[in-house]
Amino acid sequence: MNIIKSIIEYISNQVLGMRWLNDLIGNLIDMMFGTDFANGRWGLSIQFFIYDFIKIGILLCVMIFIISYIQSYFPPERTKRILGRFKGIGANIIGALLGTVTPFCSCSSIPIFIGFTRAGLSSGVTFSFLISSPLVDLGALVLITSVFGFDIALAYVVAGLVIAVIGGTIIEKTGIGNHIQDFVYNGENIDTESPTLTTKERMIYAKEETLSTYKKVFWYIVIGVGIGSIIHNWIPETWIQAVLGQDNPFSVLIATLVGAPFYADIFGTLPIAEALFLKGVGLGTIMAFMMAVTTLSIPSLIMLNRVVKKKLLVTFIMVVMIGIIVIGYGFNFLQIKLN
Image (cartoon, rainbow, N blue to C red; front, side, top):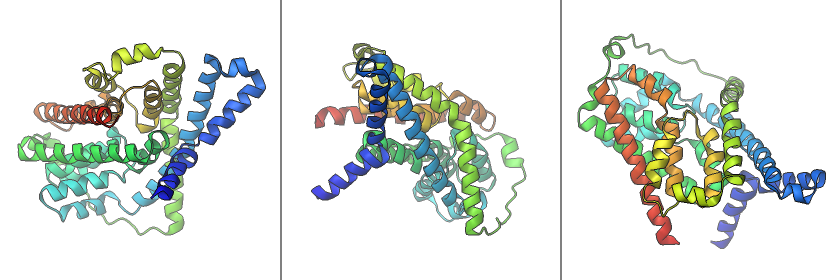
């Protein structure tokens, strides 16, 4: 058991976390500018920025390539057929799980949501997919593992799936899920058979998706890493603790409300979460921030407002937000008990 644990820790720290890269960059800055500069705020800020930017870029490209290759086996038409075989909460679970293999942000998930609705899938399935798609995926699991370790990354993914399944179930069982704009139901549902791709074509598709995704999130990564480096090296820990520390009973609520207006994905959010973690912010508070950013951003809610009626939109926001807050406080409570 100790051997397995050591292997997992090595993979988390050195392979995914690339701690060796952080040490290398720190040594290079020391050699070029001297120890005083390297250990000062500017030196540590530069080290944090370069390290996180390179690490996230490498992990992003590798994971998006793998996810896109997997996704090539699950075009929308095939996904709809798979989801149509299941009923009840089991269908919601499958919908949430399929969301984990779709590298979509919340905005690009909405057209898929429209297609699922037109295909006659239940509101529970479609909303479980809509919640889980931007919230949890294989890339999130790997990236969060690189910072927080496998246990915390797995807990984040499981928590996200729980929110997706429960949220979809509530929306379906209350009947609120039927409050969809008429044009969604009346639109033409094209259900063509996707062509069979060769391995080479799937590789080309995955490469193109990787390049396209990296271009889309490049500035989010730069901004996220920049904010993270400022938080880590320039904002006093006492300030962070006063606002987001576990002694503040409103920390999770604040993190959720602050995170919601942002528009980013896990790649741009992670550097900020890492800096908050290093400042001693509770894991539940950090999880709440990341989940709010990736699921409740204003641009995605504006797009969703065009396809659902007000009552459903408000219910969606409340269900997801309450789920995030409950998960956040739950993890903070567990962290205090374990410590």
